[in-house]
Image 1 (cartoon, protein in one colour):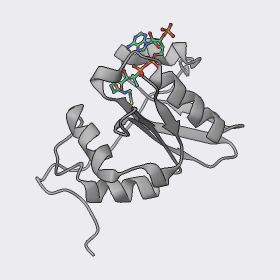
Image 2 (image 1 turned 60 degrees about the horizontal axis):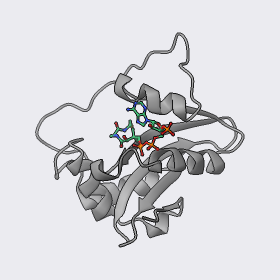
Image 3 (image 1 turned 135 degrees about the vertical axis):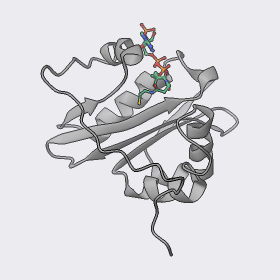
Image 4 (image 1 turned 180 degrees about the horizontal axis):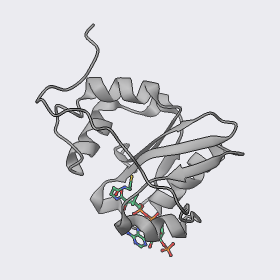
Length: 145
Ligand SMILES: CC(C)(COP(=O)(O)OP(=O)(O)OC[C@H]1O[C@@H](n2cnc3c(N)ncnc32)[C@H](O)[C@@H]1OP(=O)(O)O)[C@@H](O)C(=O)NCCC(=O)NCCS
């Protein structure tokens, strides 16, 4: 099966992106609504998608870059039935070509360390991730129109 990889945001449908996040269990349909994903994608410097022969979105990656020194990959998700077919590494290569000349950070869980290493990433010694989560009040954050 031929998989198309593109870093062109205009090909990406927020409803398909939202569905992928929900399918992978990253949040609820409310948190990952098409409207919120549309704003999210607009705010990302790098968005890479993967599509199957039928034109369905099967992978998405988002990132921030200053395009000079540093790039941070926010996340990368491949639909379960398309994992381990070389799509993730192709998406990584696309990100690297868009962010050429910058250090690229990829934050991930232990279960994906093998993937990160296969893509040529090495553990950054002494670095830990700190975060301040959005309070879970049942409301989803967002600007009102
Ligand atoms: C992690 C993820 C993006 C990897 O994408 P993928 O398309 O399945 O990976 P690829 O098929 O391109 O794998 C590239 C190489 O890494 C290896 N690899 C992939 N996942 C691996 C894992 N979990 N452990 C060890 N090796 C792994 C593959 O075997 C392949 O090696 P090979 O070239 O020697 O065969 C994908 O599994 C995914 O979407 N997981 C769920 C969401 C997630 O956890 N995202 C990552 C954090 S944001």
